[in-house]
Image (tube, rainbow, N blue to C red):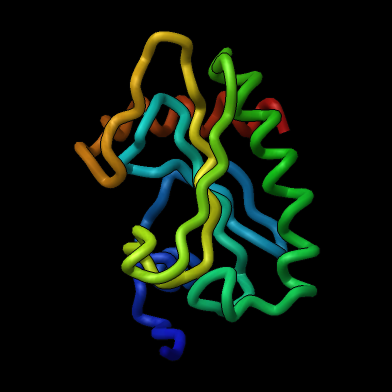
Amino acid sequence: MTYDPSNIFGKILRGEIPAHKVYEDETALVMMDIFPQSRGHTLVIPKAVSRNLLDADPAALAAVIPLVQKVAKAVKSATNADGIRLAQFNEATAGQTVFHLHFHIIPAYEGTALAPHAGGKADDAELAALASEIAAQL
């Protein structure tokens, strides 16, 4: 399959759709997931065009992985999470719903189960506050 630039992350990267941005540079956009599995669920979206890990340019991956690590540390600190789950899906059968490479950074809290992937929409004010708190840790 080929990359379709009309996917929602492509539109967000082009500024056509708003997002709760945490950080942005020439490599990637970091934003809050509006359908979080836990408080602080954050996405790292590489700007390099690819459907997923399977067709990504290795150089683009090498550039974005240090940011994924940096954001994971910031999310853990800002949310006081007990741990961090890193998720990345490749093709629909594996759970991918947006066909632009992205990494989920999902805080895990002792005794609290994760919500279903793409469950209920989060409160925009809470997402904006979390984006600021995480950005302050970067």
